Length: 286
Length: 294
Image 1 (cartoon, chains in turn yellow, green):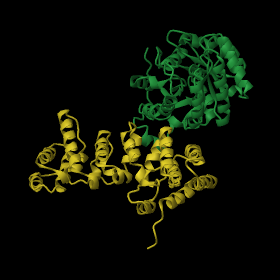
Image 2 (cartoon, chains in turn green, orange):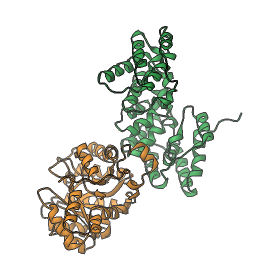
Image 3 (spheres, chains in turn orange, brown):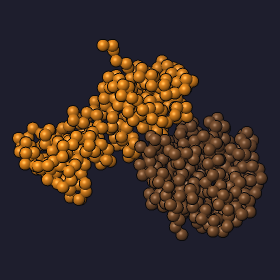
């Protein structure tokens, strides 16, 4: 089997179709110059101006990659899902992927400055592109900052369809990401690596949150239970039993899915007692 | 009726204001970079302020179905701290070319000092360099002379009258501004300067060409519904609808549209990505009924 294409090669291929020839050429030239530039010198200015100018030269419509393109993306960068990207976001990712990796402090300083002066669409594109940046060890703090954003579109750009946080965030930051996704009603099933990064502390935080919602008589996302099942202790199992007994069929479906993922010896009995639980996948419970 | 408020400092306003503005038909706002009621002392606070104009405030407005644009500039009140102003001038090019920045402004004179003159001129050069129109703040004191001089200096730097919006006009300044071919904007203040009844008479006398109505609402006593209220009063007082649309909507698009950064399609037919990510409330697309509180 031939080697998979790199993310940069894929972006170039998609952009060559999506962009007018002169614009694609302009971007390609800028990327090539940036790649061999010195970020402590002229390179940073080239980055800032090109990143900004993309808004004026590259259209903001959906990239709309087909199934083959998405499969190639996942091969090139595991977890990378550009299905909801726009063409200008792809162009900005292409530019960021061209950043020279040699001088780590200058690279970090350039991205920090870019973020500090970014407009809304620039911020979203930057966070989308985190998994494609050089020196992946440098961007955990940036990802955590994106999770703290009060702008939902920025939060979603880090948290959803993005493999970087699961790879880079420590447990404290990861748990904040998961919990905040529930707070801002972003779907957990689009968080890459959610099941892999689930952990007992998160399970406890999720159950605490469920109790807050119950106390306030507010709806609970059925997806919440996804992070609870594998780590459920006796108290959490009681919470799952409560969710399983609720009137909302989606709530019951979520509790049932969680119980099926639970090694707790009481889980099977609970499932056996519950009748008529709809069999829905997590993706249907967002 | 759709209206635009092309001069309003939304960072100082509440979500109640945004809701009332959307309900009254405001589809877009322009927030000029200004001061915060007291002078800043650090260049970093300018950077964060400019970043909030193109970031957080834009997002906040979008949650209410209102499109937010801004102007970038060093205002005249803060031009008198020269060492700081020099640092701010170095910052401006980073922000002037951002998406949704429709002009350099608000700039001009306040006390008519040499420092104000220096940084006004430097920013006119920046406007030419980045291809943006200019929004002029005319002084509260010595207004007539300050307005004339602002226009003289713009011409001296090679700007064309149609590239410059002169704001905060009154009955004493409007004739010269229009005669010289500049855009004449009027700020409707609840108590001082231009009230909306006077505004109706200005439009009746001078017609709608190159006249723009705004609120300049900020952290002081001001009315974020000044534009829709003035539009309503104009219609009640018999100003033709086409003239109301021109002065409260279309002229602002024509003047600031010279930036290439504001188009009617931005709110009438927003890009798919904006609908997904930013305009979740999306009241604009539902074509809301105008509601104007008395």
